[in-house]
Length: 557
Image 1 (cartoon, rainbow, N blue to C red):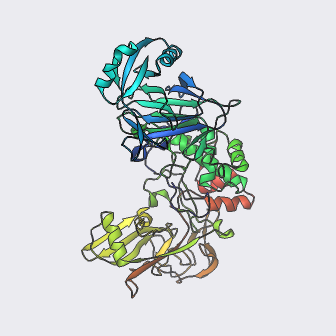
Image 2: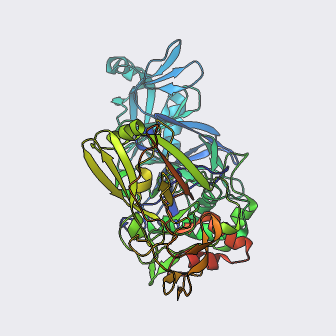
């Protein structure tokens, strides 16, 4: 959801506007994917920051934790079972490290027939092994051998029932940075290992990858390979972990309250990753950025937490149905936009309007300019599958009635292509060149995109203002008289006259073969402007006022 950073803790947010299934949130508990897919972990460490020890078990269909056993250790690691190599610093790896190492092999002597964790743990202590929950049964595993034959040689010594090999869906729990195994969990992917910190006065706070989190954790290793890690947490705690990373936590309370309602609506209205990964939403830019209780030096503020508490349980509804896409962005440059012109589809509550609010405050990096050479654009387009040859010309081929960009045309040595909607912005993004177009409100080589020109619907220039229909800052329709008017644009308050606008014209490269794009705003321009929300809050508007301005015909309940 975050693409461009303005100031610390403040980012632009993006959502998919495609149809989403019903929320997978169960009993007000949400599963948030933290590390998964290509970023899944071979080993994941936890440290209990507030209490002592952890419970080991799983989360059932109602998101209730089902404990199997517990450990008093406050630092534990969950590692993909099999051959595990531990280097001198205590890091676990599937590969042989350079220098000295300790091997935790994947073969074990196994003792079976235990009623519960406590009985298995007692026997494991006697033989120097550890309890395990394998396909719904408690067993004891002794030794960590590299081969089956090594394990078989010790069966009689331990009075074992045979040998067993850790499978590709197993997870081993160890004391962090040691070779001491505490537990092994393997249900063949039918259930996932759950770890619940034992809290202090009912509260929990657990360190994981540089951030503290409330709630528990789930570890999924369904098809082998590395482990997908999710945080299982109460929805309100989740929202508290979103707000300061999607909006500055020191902003006016009403703006933070509006953000809280949007964030809560999103998590209830979407289950973006349920079918593929088994969690509801991710904790990164693809959904909403979520870092739980923060990193110690940064995180939720008293004010951002108050914003969540003040709006507890409240979401956006449209015609009685929960809003599926409560999208928001950093700033719009002067006007929001219909979702149909950016993402396609028309949910009804995402209609664009002129926005006078941003012009009333100072917004960091509000205006931007970026220059691309023809060679750079040629390479960028080729990487994104557009085969038009060497770029010769780039121009805005259609504006929306609100003056935002709707279509951009590229002309090349082997043809041309026209992109539309949000692609008008994202097509320019290149991590290689570290360049991007920040918003939907821009011009190319001097053609105007709503920064002072006057446009008729469809992009034509008006010969006269008299009789023209306009949308006011309050969102109402009106008719102009005379041939001049004051307007609030991306550049502030200015006066325009009939015939003074600029229509979209094919641009030409500068003498050095480059194209310069200038614009205002940051984001996709659909839904709530975060800086606009800040401005409205500073003017004394409530969070209800803010949400009703940026979302059409919604109710809050």
